[in-house]
Image (cartoon, rainbow over all chains, first blue to last red; front, side, top):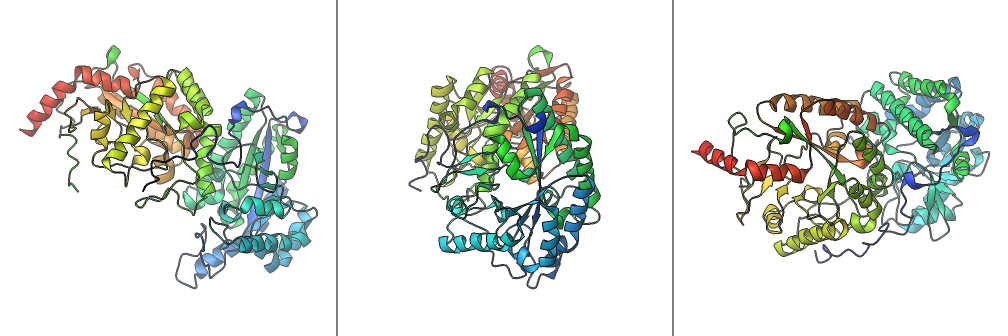
Length: 303
Length: 303
């Protein structure tokens, strides 16, 4: 315990060199296109949870928990890719909303029929790792991580209209080197860090990577899956967040961003989908104040 | 190890000397914002892992960093509206990392008390000399950066040793927030025999305990605060009570949560007979007027 009272990184600003210290309220005001006070980024995460997870690093939430073969959790997760995603896509279409799709590489290779339909949406695709058992974690082998990133992006590439620019790591986890490896793979921005509400510059040894905020606290998987709140509460919380950010943006004249991460294996269930639709209806009802756009477009507009 | 901490004596709630707060208030209300710094790469502690995931735990770190980048100013805006001054439970390394946050609290005449150096450094494993050094350094940081003499202590991440409270009393402290046994201040026995008290710091109303441990919904959290207030206010007619709301910007200030807290404060501050106090003010009032009669009453209760 000799280093328990040693503080080598105690200095002004952060205790690392990844980004500068800055408070949201002090930033230059962002103006979204059309003078809209609030940008809205909707992301749908499509995930595969293998029946035989290794759990290397840690076991991401949603994984198998029963003795092998855990058909219970395997099939509940797979439900999202077979059924739930189509309910979510239909709801987006019904309310005229655009989204991005973060897709595990293994989903793309397993379900070409799903990918063909997803390609028709024209939604922006984001890298989302290989599967939900292959988390990126501190101390992992660099070659293995490089291969995971390359394989994930290669699996999505044939289905993408534009080069893939954005990334969301499985379970938002990174190794010490993930930002460098993403940059080397041609990724421009990453949504793993939950420390802000607007994009900011994130340093890597291979040049800057932007961070896009995508709050954990507003994820369906977190609110319904981990906190076990009611579906109606999920909708209330998202609507409260939307109204709060709108009020702040209008009062301060600083553009704000509402970013929601949606998992079809959670909200695509038949008893839950109507609550997601209530959120979408709220967004549509405020359409004159909201700029709903793909994440790379939001990043570009943020400057 | 002891079976009883030996820090305080029994005193039944319904047989106590009557406490009168300044101005004839029924209830002393204090708000305790925890202003904390969690390190990205803290040293290992044999008794408690700083982060649940392998380091770097970017999700846990980012969650806390959000409070410093985004949350404090939102919380301050709400507290300002009601004329509430915070009593800051301070990771004192914040004075060096983010003095801009400390300056905002100081401008508002908030109190600062010690919450250790970092919330990723635990008391566990420190010997008494090391713990004294840590406590004294934290008090010195408060004195140097705010000009205040630190009166209160909440052990970092609620990690204690058998000597924690003795050491803080010997360093010149007046009150501890580490004991959750009562709704009024109580005398605390320390080995130096100094006059030292516990000021109630409600763990049940602590936003992190509510949101992270008990996983309550935001609107229910607001209701819990209102319900606690109503009962403590009613009982305060008989003898003055204390209500503490411990906060963390990284929890309460989220867009889906802050309004519920604000509504609770509308309810609380809409009542007459609420003494908006700080921890030090409550401790001092009790030490000056009730410490001796409470010690005598405890002796009587034990007879």
